[in-house]
Length: 402
Image (cartoon, one colour):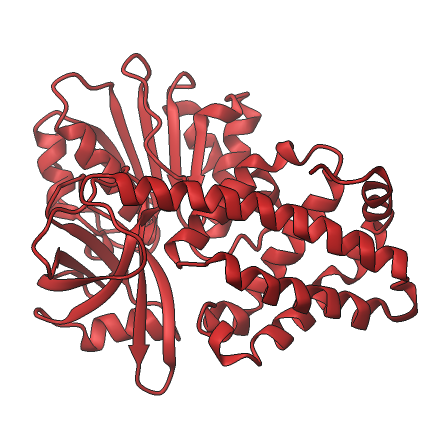
């Protein structure tokens, strides 16, 4: 059922209040939600401590209010949220808890301004959006269940191989304990994990799949994050033979390549992990477009997948430009790879990339914003700029664009 004209009018009238108090509302909402231990386990507590999750939700609510007359304009944002929820196994019965906490937070923060009409309007608006998400999530769950090797809920996987990529990055090969097939992921997607970490309790995390699609295993690659509870656990405690709870591949950042258009993969740091899945996939194709990899990291020693990148370049599958921000010593020359000192800049990007390409970008927030803005300034169409945000969409530019 569509939203009533009165509800749309009231929600739009609340935009100034959301601009002024949206973050206070979402902080209060999470404070109430996280007091429920069963609901608390659904959230990334690290994003709560950093403030990223309340910011991301505040931006999402504000975007919803601004587009209340045409929620279809938010389809990309809704798709990203739905995929994230499916990865974390969010179910319809969780939504009433969130709705109650949100309405209570609005009433608490707005106080006397939260009139009965305003509260009724937001109750209807939340119910409408919840139904949209629940329906989309059910479609994704159904697709996972019907896919060869697919599943819903948590499935047990065993770590069968652990490989140190760099001093602070580790790859893990995962095979299902039941030895049955696994669904072939879309290159760029991630796996979600339910972890029980001593001293931290239950934690749920997403990590990009860094391998090409296969029917028997996945590879994830995890960089240790400062104060990262889950990444530190993987580095310090996850060993071959350990069993992990894993949900089916999810995520809307996927390979969108045309055989007739070049592909540019742009990354910084661990942002290369989902792009490596895309690159490995294209490497298996007999007919592939020209591939240009542009990657920034601190030093040659901190480069993830160095050996594989050199193999692909020497095989003439791709060309690459590598930028090293914290060294003047470049690695030995490899055919197909050009090394640079310093950071990747918008001016370099303008002069050295094909504007007719499909661009896939992943990395830290500042890197994403700078590169996307540079491409927009070159009038690259929006539908040829694809990017992934690790963590919460707490940056206004990225949140609204996605």
